[in-house]
Length: 250
Image 1: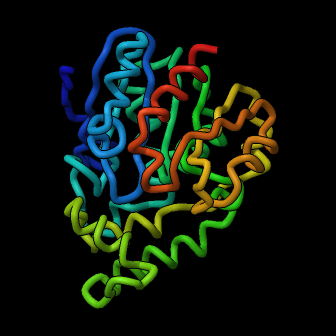
Image 2: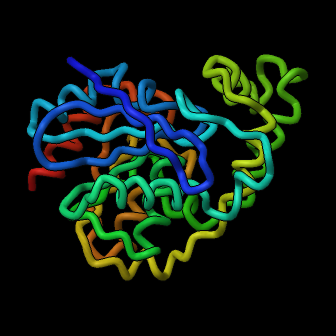
């Protein structure tokens, strides 16, 4: 499978890496925290399967992640900068009839985009539950603690997996801390008013971000789709790509 990589220059000059494959209807996929387009969408075959189903799969690396730049100036992290980056990418590409999906942080960003008036044909919120969208404060503190204690945690500590994943992906801790504090609250009332099909695709054992079935129930046109696994493992399963293809083709 051929992956084409290019660069999008965000409004503040930060270089955002964009990876894509396939021909056809555009599908913008947003990865999770401390991850990347490669880790979430390419490595385990999801992008290949979606491209084979007729999609032009567009996979940016968020700032601080993957091949994108990780500025360490606080000025590079105004409120909801990831939403602004993705809105800018959509505008630059001239995307009008497209689909949108995100996993974990990508799902939160996609949900934020929906509340800001961005309207794909279909949207997918993956690895996300109702409580995770409305209760960012506790999750923020967990990840800030993981960054601040990254050289002190040991196996068995609840931050152990997050710290090791962050280190394995070579995430800059200073930039990551700034990015985490840029995430504003999400207007859940505005999200539940969005009138388009939204697939809540989540590991059957994934409760990291709350209840996925409850999120689907609260959406105007939501549907819950379970795939095998918990939060970290579900994104590695081939069933995730199969679920995306089924939902998008309904």
